[in-house]
Length: 342
Image (tube, rainbow, N blue to C red; front, side, top):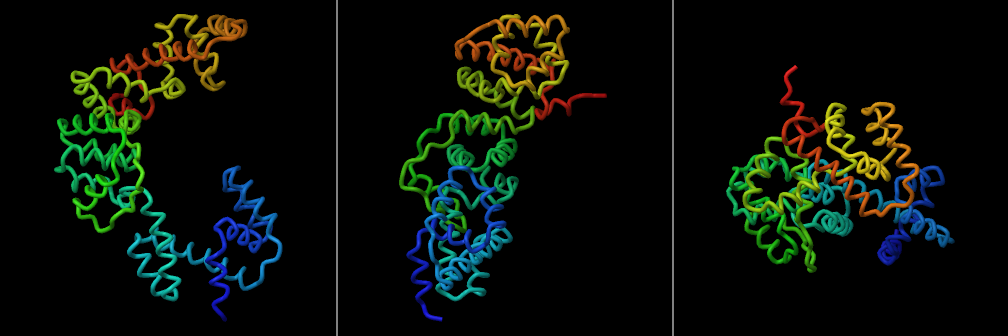
């Protein structure tokens, strides 16, 4: 076979290759694949497929072969990481093709800073970095998934927890050169390809998401200690940790306790934009007469300002947070169930 198909393949755009692949796979398989994609990409791909006229068999075979090799590389990478995938591809494919596929998957894996940490166990990673400077730990936690960040955070000493949380919350833009230095300083086996543009990482949202996934004792200890240093920051974190729709996570007794402290006007306004499921949860914890009154208020309320609705919803959230802090209610998934004695 001549080298023409490979040369042609390298000049074909990625979207055209995808269109050729869909055509090659047949209607049924192509339809299933399209069903897994978002609407915007489906529209683009469909338009590209419509433009495909005649594709010679050599080009078609070459595109399918590339897809197979990429799928094989992904399988190897999932099984044993990039190094394993590289070794297996070198054995399985011609040298030139192996190098090309390796460069593609490495570009995908390392396009985010610290991407190589995604496969590292959280506990092992914590052991590895726990003696690092709080700023270094904060930078790493800002780049790992919140679940792993929460696991690492919970295992740190309390004084270091507070420093790390404060630094993540106040982190804004991070110079990619700093990220590179941290990666190299930790002597990791792989070096990530860091974008030359500044990245916005960390922030209050990152802290809130981590603490949402932490156990109740860790979250409470961090916030209580941090509150003495920066009460405004703690207030921002709390507001992001529990939002209005999270009332679905409150048990019935907790909803009843909340309702005792909420004015009907605020309740009617708060429920104006609530999901039907949440409205039903609230109504079932009220007397039939009280629920009917709230429904009538909502029906005849007329147009309302979004800001007013959000303000009333925040009042409900604030009451729930206060009752949870006092140990009077339980929020599902927040660890309170472990403290109960039956």
